[in-house]
Image: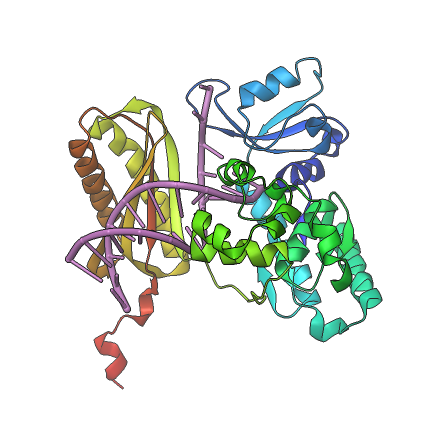
Length: 358
DNA sequence: TTCATGACCTC
DNA sequence: CCTTGTGTCATGAA
């Protein structure tokens, strides 16, 4: 199940006046008036070529002659609330239930509907209806023998769609789709596939395993081979909480001045610290993400002996790792900076004397 | 095995 | 002209 143009649809629900006209949810970076990118566009905006990931300034050009267009900043808290409501509903329709993002989840329904395809469509319809009635959002649902096919199916039927793939229809469905429709094949992989003559998912069937392995390595080769045949054995699995907590920001200007960068590090330290506090966890590994003025990404991380969660420690380690990097790259300026925590453990599971006192 | 790093994906 | 957050994987070193 995949919610349609999720962030923009949330905004349409908050303010129904916005419906029927181009609506863009933007990530403003704060460098200049319109710097930043489009996070989500509704379908009216997509008609003008606007899509996720393009610069805001470009979207404004595309929509120059559509003055009734609306550009809104992200309101992540609101989208999280909407997501929670939807997921609480969806969870009741499948078991196991796996949420993979704010806007998508997998439901194992084999035990619930068995081989009854009609039953599975009725179940999906009633889920769609309930989400629409209770939360007001539309979504798209793919029903298939495995997660890979279900995901691709839901993709091809949005918005507000429902698509069932029966076993006998798998190759007929998959083969004509562009290779980029395959999860895991994005901006970098499409040209590589293309150079091998692979434009459609079906073209993968022509390559033998030796050729796949030579080009992509054993692991990916196996994935592509199976995917082209519609094979995927990854079970639907409940997920716990995130295993990483991170925050990354864009600096007001490119800089290699640690004091200037520190003001941003302070901000994001507080943010990740508070999110750790909310979950009552300590971390063992802290990493910094460093994106240079040339848009090259670097990371540096350190695993500490005594796990911790203090604002102090986060900022201190973050600064130290950043300083070391800057020292190693004296001519490089940073554009964006981030901190990422991992290696979590619940704070109260620390061995403490009190556990042995009774 | 664990750790560090980077590449890539997605929205 | 280029955001943000989370995850997976490959690789190489310790």
